[in-house]
Image 1 (cartoon, rainbow, N blue to C red):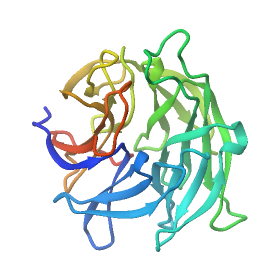
Image 2: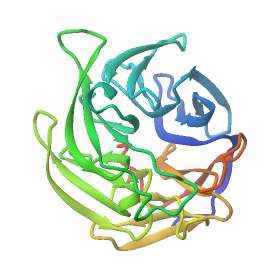
Image 3: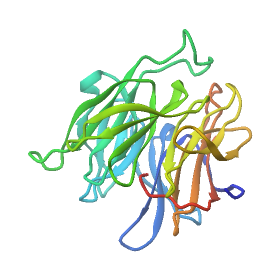
Length: 301
């Protein structure tokens, strides 16, 4: 069972895309995007923070190529950017050129192949439903281009997605799992040898919007739920394939948008929260909390 959450870091804006990473110095940091602040940041378990880069078009999903290059999705212009050691950015792939859409969350496999969801907007001030639903969008595959070192190449590997978010890849590298936020479900695909996706299926119907996810060693997912009832608070659920909810963390007064497992034993659950969906967002609304759990994460993400 999950322990009582406690605040690690507050006074953020809209934290997203958390990734736990231990550096060559043996120190562990939670890396994340403070999307609306336009910053890629990291925080250690004592609450010490560092700003890594400024992303003018708003940062989202994060990951590392096998050579150690940190890459981030630039949300507004639909590009993948590499972050240089000095914090400067360089474009490495243009997903927007494929479908003209903004892009959001991303997960990378062991080979550096990144799966990036694109999306179309809806009116967040109104209840999602008939007359206010995002149009279908896509999943892009972005991978290092062997013919152009330091650059990526991209293609669409899934379509007809309903606001894809919070993806994970199973530890064996064979299954891609993604939240379809406003379809209130989690979907899964088989990953082919070339990175293509096949055998689309429903992993779990949730009955509430789904967002950022993280997998544990028992194959369950911790899933951020932005709200249970529109206009209200959300929380985090631990769900098995098929939809059985086996644990949950409810929160008051905030929306829940992302989570990941990390820490020395991979049993620290990081909970990223901000303004309730449908309420105007303001700087300082965001926070990261932590809770201890029994089952460790598998690091993807």
